[in-house]
Length: 202
Ligand code: ITT
Image (cartoon, rainbow, N blue to C red; front, side, top):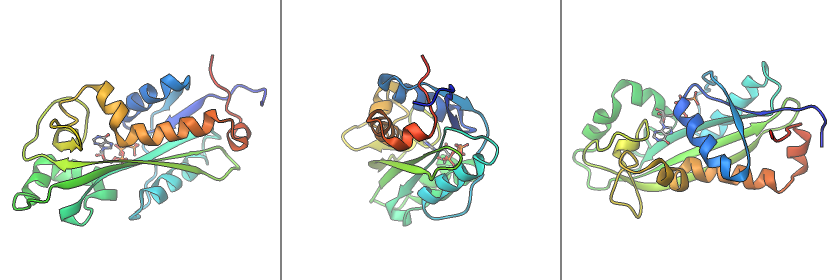
């Protein structure tokens, strides 16, 4: 185990993401710190490439160990749109714009994806992806969560993520699945994780 104490950082300009990731990792005994900056986003259809690029760029100014994540919602009737453009679409046409586009569609299927990139300077990134399938509601419902949560109903539920508790979302979401994969991989004591220099905080 390396001797110098290196905490684990999550770089994101989105405090909701940080809050959720902290709660998901806590049961694994993993504490993260918030590096509150937006990642540099490359235009690419794959969230994996966006997360990997965001991490690589961030490691130019921060030696890590570092987590960066990219998320998006993929709507079947819109051929996967907004996908990698989810942030821009949310800030421009918003939830009502999405509902308008889907007005005439009976196929409401969609999924959320979260891809987490973990790395440290000098090491290649490791990626962890989580997805949750569901459908787009007819109306904006609920005030919990953030972003697209008030229009997304995960499979097996009748409520949007905007109506469910954070405990429910943090055990069923795309982010939960991605960060849990990361936590299990790290906890299994991989040599890569050890090489990253990260030492658990007491
Ligand atoms: P960083 O890049 O700084 O991490 P961001 O909010 O810009 O923050 P993304 O590009 O990954 O992050 O976000 C894509 C969009 O998807 C953005 O509008 C989010 O609000 C939304 N989003 C991401 N995760 C979500 C979730 O769990 N529930 C609802 N909407 C989510």
